[in-house]
Length: 127
Image 1 (cartoon, rainbow, N blue to C red):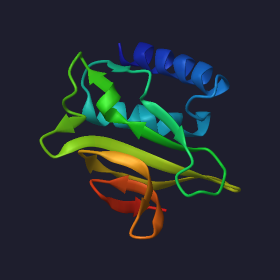
Image 2: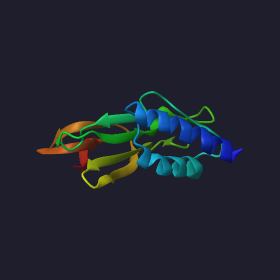
Image 3: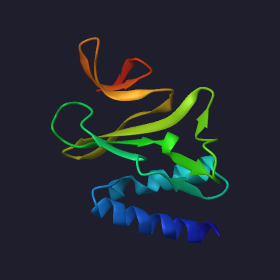
Image 4: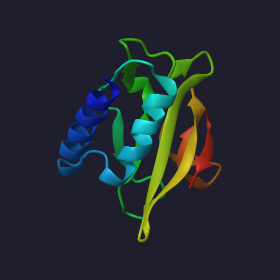
């Protein structure tokens, strides 16, 4: 059953990447995360992949918001009392670089303390 889920995930991610969704280069990590956290299938909401300019360089960066993911119809194990898992990548000339991974209760992109970046629970965690 896992190979079928893997194939469906690849097909869906391939379509999303072409339609302005998650870049294909990030698909293997998405699949690893699903296998690590969820023992059944994972469904992804429309706002799961967020394309935002995290650092102000004009390039689209990517934040995966696992508050928008359901494992067997539930937000757990992606979300706990500590918050929900998010992962953020910067789009650099040489490719994608992960700049944050952790559980947060709230996140946004903006400025805090004079620094622009990804703000998680009120503090800048990634440029």
